[in-house]
Length: 343
Ligand code: ATP
Ligand code: MG
Image (cartoon, rainbow, N blue to C red):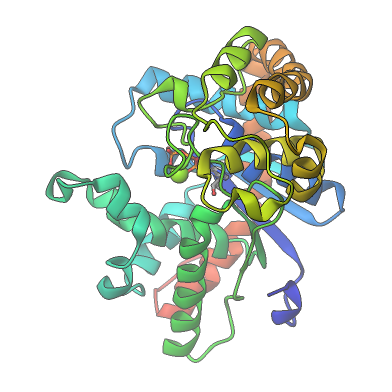
């Protein structure tokens, strides 16, 4: 799937990250690092701190504000240039919530019921989950379609939501006999599209996981990164000769994928280099690599966080630029569905 599937639409990238906690290595490798690559390829890029998504589960207001600014600092420290990309927080562009409502009326309950993220996040007691958590994927569809984005770089876990966005766009176009919304393609690339928890190789690394030891945060010190990698779950086997030898070794495979993504190499090349060596050798090498790559980002985040007013100014400017694209698309949507617009 490529942008070529959307003739008539300018290639445009949209993606977002929730300020539901601090940025993790999973967010960095699965999303942020690739957001920077896309920006540097010269495609129009729009990146959003999706604070309206974050409140689908309870957030302490002061922590949410802090996490939003810190995530903005993380984006900039990782290489997002607010002059070249549009960087803003979702709630400052009201059109997201407005289009979200329209798309709530397009999405079908049967489609929403298949969303695995809701099942994972709501857990056993889904009756107590917020209505917002259930509607999350249609708001995400609005985030993307509001900009007529054609490509959405995400981690593997968000593929289902981008596919739902395509279904919602197609149903809207069909119901109103228009070719108004493009069919955005998920862009899932690299060696670490699903970074797993350091404590449990069957669980995705998440910023909202209650266990801090399960993840590496972009703000972790070198000592913390070293301690977490040293304690990361593995097995007693040495590194195999070939990648296929990691098939049933989820934790070992995860560390290899992390190494490969950080080093910009393939997992097969990493396995080959460490073949026959134990994790007592591999883990210190991974620590050195992770500290070398993440250390400068964390230092720069600290520097940026010393001036929150400047971060707020950048987000405000980004919001104004985002609104200038979004507002006409929302207005046209309202016209298509039959709302009276008095101007
Ligand atoms: P939460 O636990 O609150 O859902 P999260 O860590 O899953 O937080 P999101 O804000 O939901 O982060 O996702 C932001 C982006 O990071 C998405 O593109 C998502 O696919 C990607 N991402 C999240 N976790 C991982 C991971 N473990 N590996 C690769 N990509 C990831
Ligand atoms: Mg998530």
